[in-house]
Length: 413
Image 1 (cartoon, helix red, strand yellow):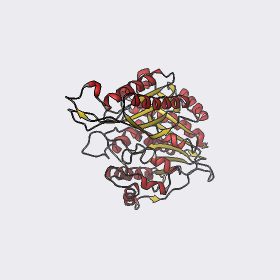
Image 2: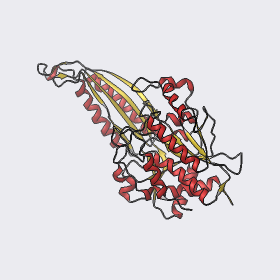
Image 3: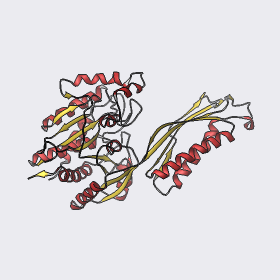
Image 4: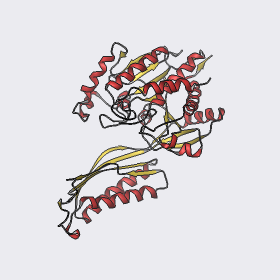
């Protein structure tokens, strides 16, 4: 059996048209007109493949085949439908359409499976609208409840429960459920690598064994705003210069680790933000990630202590607010072996590797055996309009998933 990049290309290019027209690249936040248009298209395509289609309260779309064993749990394939602001066409979407193509190939070859095969498109993975990642998959796995939703508010002041009401516009097209229980046999997520390793090494596939843990903080340093011309350098309480040693130490610390680890200060705001006033406050984010739990824990403790020591020595006040913490996740070892065998049989080169980015697979791994396959990102670019992966590269990843899904879902001859 063979997947076809022509279908993959058609689906990705079509879904790429459901985007805000006033911004470059792809911007498709949850519960927006663009999101509803993409969901409408996916519902149509799932039904064309004769899948039973449902959408839960959160907007997660599930299309499922019928297995020969009514008691067998589904094998799920998918990823997310939303994008970051001004992102690309492939992030998330490549995994959703791979699920569609796997089902198409099985049906075209008249293959029935003991386990149902389900294609899933998760909502709000990126957190672009409501500021928190993996909300759709957390709802799907019941890690998020009705009473939790009102805490999430978008930039315009709309709460998540208010935003979800727009999904009612799809009720005539799809069967709705609230928060169904979906125990699963397995979950597979094909994803673009979002980094340069596979392309730079000329490798066809990345077979993921670990997903990085991550921790993020908002740090505030408080000094004293004053005149930039009349205040001597040795009499200043400059919050910005107090931040610089912290940035330097974060860079040094991440580079010093033996296991893949990174540190980033991605956002910085100075108050009062004027060219002729010494900054009285520096408010910045501090993001730490590692593939190893002990390493991440050590980095977190080191940087918290360093911020405190640095602030006190500079005569600055400070606060540290932890915004997010996810420990590293190890994916299923047995299914990794099957993926390796499938890649070898097709003579595709592969690397066993970790993922430096978070994915819905993190949440699903607590729910069922979970695996990921990476395909190369051209020039390592992602979360930007230049994001691209060759169609044939996605086809290879899809072929390996097809063979693996067929083995685990158990084709009935």
